[in-house]
Length: 111
Length: 112
Image 1 (spheres, each protein chain N blue to C red):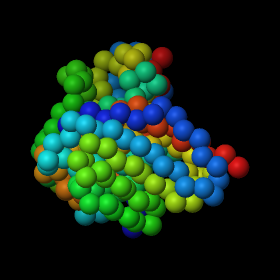
Image 2: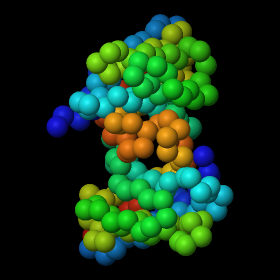
Image 3: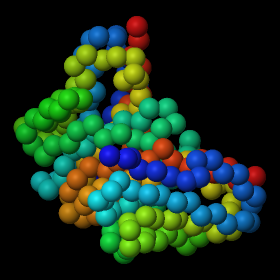
């Protein structure tokens, strides 16, 4: 699976949009981009995933650049409960369920 | 729908002992994966089972093993425990490998 690079930490004001970047410059054509988050000491939580089109669900939006070398996870109105470590993962589907977690971005939402 | 459950939630063992952890996936999910999380190494993949067969294996020693039953419930076993095995062990289930994984709350193992 391709390696991802994320900033180690970010701050965001409560109520504002949180934009979390991820670089995956070596991504292959058959690799999807997944985002998970982990709130302190809990199991990771799935957020969203995509291949090349932008995706939106009730939790977040995922913007993938046209060359697919980077992506941005957007939490439109961050709340204190969104404080967590966010992991960007790229993986090939139909090759088994093996997620390779990097260091992630520690997002701190501040009042 | 009930989520992924893991038992026990906390465990304290002595070096040299063995331990078995249990995971019950979401109903209808046939894939179960196990991960180890430590402060130093982060989240690392241990292995995945699908329809009672190990499909993927991470880079862990043979002391770490697992199995899956016909009802998709899974167990992992660690033999000859070492201090470095102290970690949060997470289980995740999925319908198949094209869908997202849902994680349980984890079992926190402390080896003394």
